[in-house]
Image 1 (tube, rainbow, N blue to C red):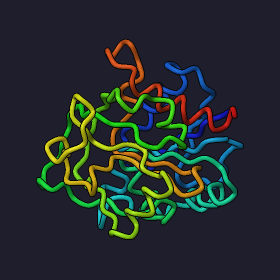
Image 2: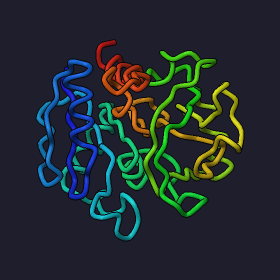
Image 3: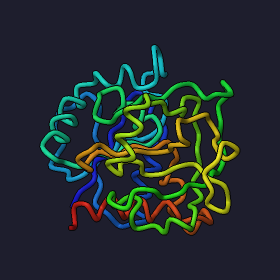
Image 4: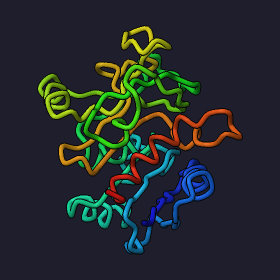
Length: 230
């Protein structure tokens, strides 16, 4: 099994993801350049966080047209696994591989802190391996993490068990007080209907090492790997 981590101009969490997958979790990882089209036979494509193309126009709007994204879209359409974190999540929404959009934080401020996440989907391996009554502690670092989807789309997400995580408090309760950015229904991550494309705003790669005092993110990344191993 092999992971491929894409680097766009402005990516700044690509090496964090490579280190977490390769050194903390012992997976095989290759680095993919945005101008290339060859995915080098990877099983899972990861779009990392950062500020691709400086977030000009709209976060993820330009990266969506990078040459490698044609291959990523084709990979996803064949049933291949794709995972986007933060800016990667924004890019996946821009491509239409994931439903919804990421808007400016309700506060209009950049937010960088630990948050609590409630695992929701009992189908998606990213979240189903985590207990629903035990919140995960994962860092966020974004200015446009306010997930928006219209009412019908929200109903479809819940009907199809596509909501991966919701922001919650320390006790695991989902409420507006624990919503850091104004996201619709406190949503922090979603999957596509086919359960092979996933996106989330919080950074699991920043919480995957005992050296950092937090390994909650490792469970999420291992869940992604289980999709291929199954």
